[in-house]
Amino acid sequence: MESLNRVKEPKGRKRSSKRDPEANRQLLIKATLDTIADIGVTDTSVSRICERSGLSRGMIHLHFGGKDNLLTAAAQHFSTEYYAEMDRMTDLGSDASPEDRVMAVIEADLSEALLNPRTTKIWHAFRGIASSHPGIARYSSTQDPKLVETLRRAFLEIAHQNEQDPNLVDDATSGTLALLEGMWVNYLTDMQIFSRRRSAELIRRFLGGLFPGKFML
Amino acid sequence: MESLNRVKEPKGRKRSSKRDPEANRQLLIKATLDTIADIGVTDTSVSRICERSGLSRGMIHLHFGGKDNLLTAAAQHFSTEYYAEMDRMTDLGSDASPEDRVMAVIEADLSEALLNPRTTKIWHAFRGIASSHPGIARYSSTQDPKLVETLRRAFLEIAHQNEQDPNLVDDATSGTLALLEGMWVNYLTDMQIFSRRRSAELIRRFLGGLFPGKFML
DNA sequence: GCCTCTAATGGACGATCGTCCATTTAATGT
DNA sequence: ACATTAAATGGACGATCGTCCATTAGAGGC
Image (cartoon, rainbow over all chains, first blue to last red; front, side, top):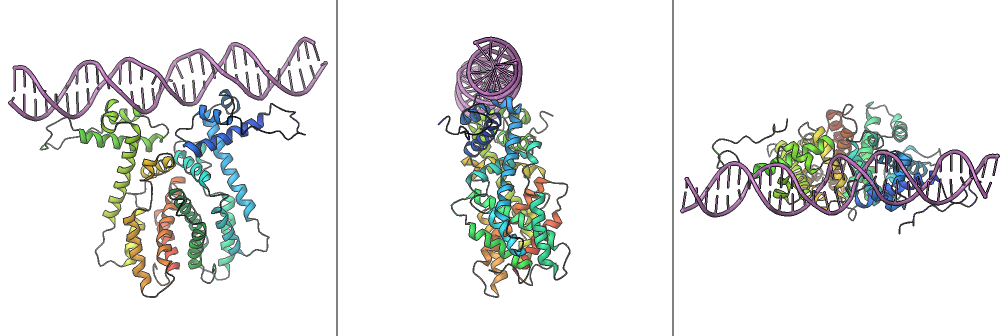
């Protein structure tokens, strides 16, 4: 068990066989996230992280200078990975309708790849300690500027034809994100009952009410 | 600072002056919640709770049998207080329209009394550790049966006149709760930007889309 | 081969954790 | 006033925390 996660070196690499600082850095980050998902932030200690990564206890101080920095790096890594996967799942052809682009974001956010026991536990764990960890707070926001802009532009296209309340686009954007946030909480609370399809349809229904004639089944 | 929170005995009580076990129990719970809101769950230790309450270190073991039980009791107390205050703020006359009853729930949930820095931090702190603390998980759900039923019945009345999709009522209910959940996260993320009024109006707008002709300004 | 430099180790360290209990203090019954 | 009972104290305890560093191990240069 102890060295199962060890890095297997792609043979043609610059580094010949052992000694790969960067790989160990990443290994520590992964071990941190796994530990948090497994036993919770409260019990995630330096010793526990090290024994899971198979590395020695000194490594954390060596690579990150301390536990807090490792936690922050892990939060950043987690956030980056989330948005990278989100991008990957939502780059439809540029001729996709704005409705399809919005629904792509929703379905991506509710997909198994992004919403699963591991990510939910980690996400809420980080958010729970964000108030007292300024470094982590910066990576626990759902308001990623790029994602917000994606939604905003899609809703703007939809609402453009008929001039309406100028707040409509903003409301649709932050309402959609709020609904997704709520779905994550529902998932964490009871994974058995939760249904990805029903959750997506619920949000579609709300958007359909906001933009009459749009977001129909 | 140390004994500011000490209990002042109502003079005519059964207990003459000192020695009030139940009051100390409550005092420990309050101190626990205050500590969590102040420095985060991670740093909330037995010593810190005791020094805030002004009581001795042995009290926690005496009254709760251990730190975990105290945390669970604090979560329960917090949840109970939330729903009690919610009840207090939403008992309109029984002749109130269903729309008003729904909006009362929304406005209560977004009111200063229920949504403030202290409650948000505590709430998310508990949710963050709920996965690894089964005892706490039971009190970190937004799906309080009574509140759900209140919303369900109001939406049922609204939708009743014209038969629609049978899922409409359920969707409106859990959608409203999800939106509120998202608003709490927005508040936690950036309390400066957050606007209670705008948040309430956003949810009203979503509901207005769901029930045409209803929830107008 | 040897030298140099850095990655990596693992134990030492003091501080703090949560638990437990012998003792003291206050209220009650007689 | 004294005995009894429960509440409350605060220090002892071993375990574990996070940090730090003297030491070892491995890779590249000469």
